[in-house]
Length: 151
Image (tube, rainbow, N blue to C red; front, side):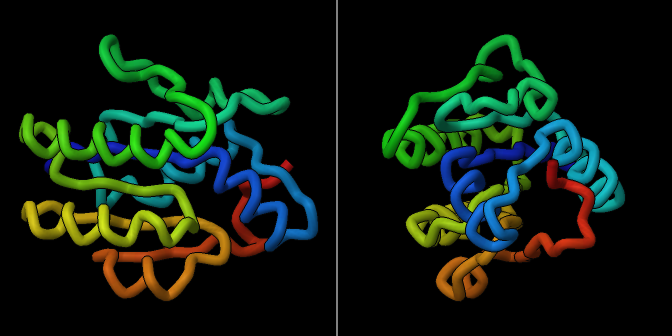
């Protein structure tokens, strides 16, 4: 099974989950468990990286530390650039051929197109995922209130 990288835009998740679920917050430990269970038959997840601000409820349970890149990435808008650069580098190195983007931000539509042009797959998961992302991802899923990911 090909290696999979999970790239989470924490700032976007914080906003969109709160908006969709009446100011609820993600439990990153539950998210890590849900992600592993929900994708076990489809993906060989080797790396999870959280991008954005470190918020009150720690994202540590979500992250799998990678000796080189398993760090919390920059705050603010730069997280979009960081995700794009890391993805391009991972595709260039040829280690990762599957990408799971945890976001609902349409700014990643071009990145999804790029990933697919490189022969890799992209699966977008989020809350309130816009049509722009749904159209360009290989697969797209949205959380609902039945998913055990909320505090």
